Length: 332
Image 1 (cartoon, rainbow, N blue to C red):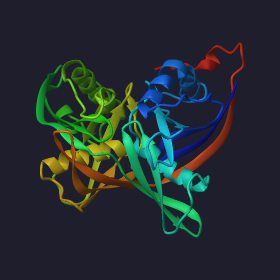
Image 2: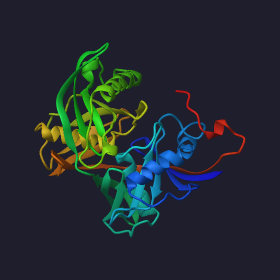
Image 3: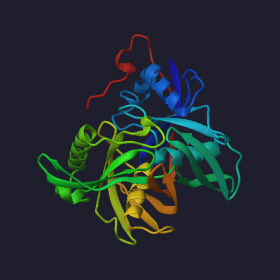
Image 4: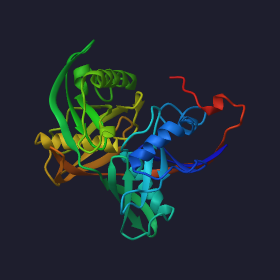
């Protein structure tokens, strides 16, 4: 078995783009393709995401035939747990990749790349100068605050306040100081443990719904913030812990989108105002509310999130028939 990939990273968060070796995926909606890959091709996800070729926090993208009219390409996202519905850092990388690989006609100063994700159509704007692709910004699907001002009793931490917001995926949002944590002083491990505890509790006790499709109604993870949502300017820091306690090195594109939706719903950011979001690794995304929208019964926004992606390698992976460990494993 041979699989080829292009590796990129956005703000330190890896993206392994599959370029060859996967069998064709049957026609259907993007959610049907996601279900097919999950049910029939999951062994390939484990080969590419898990050790010895990947690691616990690896992230991947499989390009498939688009179904939505106007989409230039379609993508399925993969990680240590399975297949997500939206990934902003991947969109930033794929925007640049699509321009560089000629998947769309190159135009200066901005090339538009319409990317179909499981959550819907995402529009990426790629800066092009002297024929080279650079920074990328994207506008995603309508994002909304699902539930604000919630509290829960969490063992070892007492009463924790949180919001739940959707930015292509659902996240719990909570101020890290409630857990006795502080950016720059607390261990990453302690952030991960706190976020995971909240995620696990809410998955068990806090039902979600999405107006478009039931497959979108699951809690993807928890984002712990520095509590600076209401500040009108400056940098706000966060860490996103998603899937099976996977840590995002970037500020998290869909997470920034969810934060912007919650901030706007609470009157903490105005239309057209730009904030800077910083990750646990120190990388930054810009984020702004472009306009208001609707998502079923929810008041929603369209957010614009920007960042920069870089190439890190091109690889051909092989799997020998008798290599059991080569089919993928994780030690944590």
